Image (cartoon, rainbow, N blue to C red; front, top):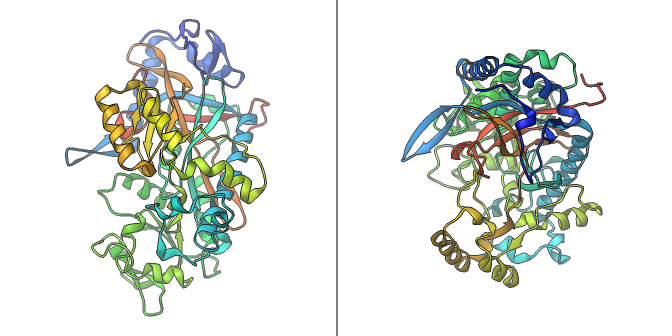
Length: 487
């Protein structure tokens, strides 16, 4: 691996998160670029090796499914951080708070008055065809009208530097443990860069999460009983479930550990008997959380837990049914949703979108499949989508048939020139595309946004796919106070 010479590094026509041009670091990245540029090839290689060893020692893994098998892999991590100046982040944070507030009002409205439909702002047929609308939640009003207590919104930056919201994850957003572990690894291998105090911390997230969960407790007691409900060790996000439970100091449970009593309260089985549970941070999908209400075959959930929730005896986070707004077609209406509920213009823009349920949009999409990114409404992890410029005529023909058969289930967006950031390859530093997933915690009285988020990077040259399940990696995300007043 050669010495890193920023004068030789170039990414033509793209926005680079660290450099404004060859040899010209952005102000927030100046110290980092000077540090990395001062290292000789052996020192760069040693840093990379130290990070890999730390990940192995710390046991940071993720699970992928391959041909029916489950494979635990070491977390793919790149040591060159992604940097965002704090003044820009303040704008993003305000936009995310605005967005999540409007989405929670939207979800609450859909399960109650449906005024947004009556006023003709949101189409009734969209709701009727939503696979994530839960009839069992109609008439419920969680405390403070908060349904999506935890949201992970994916952000991308275009070549002109504009930050867009790509999608909102409101069901069971994952990845925050890797945001925290990325910082832990970076501090281990480059501790000297954190001595100035200009890199804002992220380690308060578990405390913020605990406080938000505790505030949801139906019993107003000093120390409510909180549990993290996991589907079990075979779930792809089990590492995160265990990590967050450990960090918060709460119990990690499976469905069989909980029981709903005759008083419609939830209890945890322990060696000392039953213990009253106040809050369930559930990492089990809606359809498996209660076999009495949803899938009767589910062994992952807790019989009667929906009854306990409806009666106000336990808090569920996120609330069942929150996924009605976690739909890539609903996403296209979020700017109007913000205007409707908040009477304000969106602070953060959406990526321009075409809805295949609209005839004119559908005709445009079918005529331009080679140029667009086509997404199904409710898939996640980068699955089921067509990246037009990287697709074959056969793939385009297949998607044309899928769209014609079920236009409601598909939307399309232009192929953005996603921003890049320097990334170590085997023998050099090259630009690779990135996105960002910040996490937003909402309670009845407060909203908290992580300082940065999980930066995912496409490790394959030219690829736009950043998901770790499909070969992507990750970076530490630094929000840097360029005034020097960070803590």
